[in-house]
Amino acid sequence: MPGIPQEILDEILSRVDIVEVISSFIPLKRAGRNFKALCPFHHEKTASFMVNPAKQIYHCFGCGVGGNAFNFLMRYERIEFPEAVEQLAKKAGVVIPKYNLDRQAESLNSFLYKINELAVIYYQGLLNSSEGRIAKEYLIKRGIRSETIESFKLGFAADKWDGLLNYLRSKEINLSLLEKSGLIIPKQGGGYYDRFRQRIIFPVYDLKNRIIAFGGRILPSREKEMEVAKYINSPETPIYVKGKNLFGLNFTKDNIAKFNAAVIVEGYMDFLTAYQEGIPNVIASQGTALTTEQLRLLKRYSQNVVMVFDADSAGQTATLRSLDAFLEEDMEVRVADLPSGFDPDTFIRKYGIKEFRKRIEGAKNLFDYKLDLLRSRLDQNRVEHKAKIANEMLATISKIKNAVLKLEYVRCLAEVLNLKEEALLIELKKIKPYVSVLQEKCLLEDKLSDIDPTEKLLLKLMLEEAELIEGLRGHLEPADFQNEHIARIVSVIFDLASQGRSIKPNKLMAYFSDEKISSFIGELLVPDDTLRGVESRQEIIHDCIRRLKNKRLRLKREELQEEIEIAQRTKDTERLEKLIQDFHQLTRGGI
Image (cartoon, rainbow, N blue to C red; front, side, top):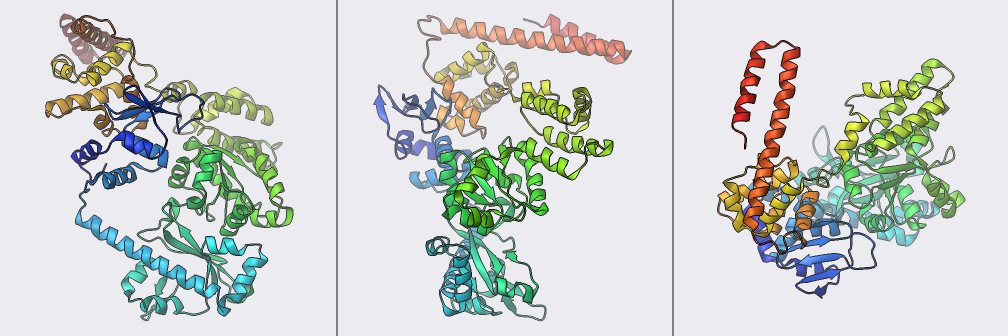
């Protein structure tokens, strides 16, 4: 973790008890030396989730997840590694060192959160005053109930240039901080004025329920008169980056995880109407194409998405821009159609929530949605238009990670456009970067599921019996292991051993950001019958070393032979001579 020494992570893991950490979230029952429970990460009727207090790790025999206390907290709470470290550090009483710049940034952020809280109080007070009567009547007319207004802390900014400015100045907050908050704007001739005026205010929250920004909608009665944008938003600040947040996610994240699906709408009113009428897993994109950061944030809770954007061309364009990003993040996305002229808010108010749910249930997969949209805009009977449709669809298909699905979509596209699959596959290869479906299938396979048993056994022995590591270091090196993940783990183990540091599985896991590696280490430590009844482990170890060395030598020979053939074909005499010497030297030095 950047900025935190490994020694601090080790100290945290030394002070916390994984049984205590996990039992604060799920009930554990004693099972011999271990503890067991129903796995919180997949549905099961028989307990297969085990916690090992001796090794300070957990492992589920059902879904295969596993790791240390950090990994559990990240997965269960759906938080990132830094947050898990902070939580466990606080629990363990470990102080995480921070640089002065970090402390300054943290202090500034705290002030900005406080300023936003004060601004909400100000805006709420105005909405409930005589000045905000028209705004509140408008919200109620739009069907937003009083409890929703209160829950989301909606407010109102009056038609004053310095109403909020004077209020916050009365709280003794300096102008420099107010400017950094984005709530006031400097004048060209000096002085400041309020950013939001004559607008309904929508506070924007982060996942910790802190107010980080605001959105403002102009009152309809002033929209034409003032000739300004219907909606404006806070600028980016030290605590707010628009492309890294999703409106409403703090309220709906648990239901998104519960239903394993998120419904994405566009605007504040779309969200509020859908949420209060019974769509508990809705979020809003705030009118922009979704970013990679937003999708990765959403993936913590579900990889399944239904997009319900406006039926106008702008809404369709925003949807299309987002589709490929979903594919690149390996998310399952469908798109719900609305009648022309409707957005989710107006549709629900006219037709009701049941009809809206039907639209969600009948949502098209992204292939059908994009293809139908392109065919509605282009005439596929014209050759040049058919080519445009094909190119647009292939650009999307190229980002699908599942090789079988990719080929199936190419087949469907060929059928719809009355083209040959071979022609589409040729065009697909032109899209960069391109990986053939056969290569992709290999790349997508879990590299930890197909490991040489010899490599697996040696790593298992090192994890179970640390005293064997020093002896193995004298005979092996990480490069002797062909599996890249095993080689990485062995490299860290050998490095720790060379420093004279203890190698405990739970601490070893903290060296890897890849959760699959932590689960794999946990899986290796599950007791089995591999070595039961074996009298001489040394013989097994020597045999394993011999096998690994011979395999590495064989692979190196094959590699040299291939290079020799290439040098012969290209008549590269100088290189050929060098390769032959290397080959003979390798053969003489073989085991």
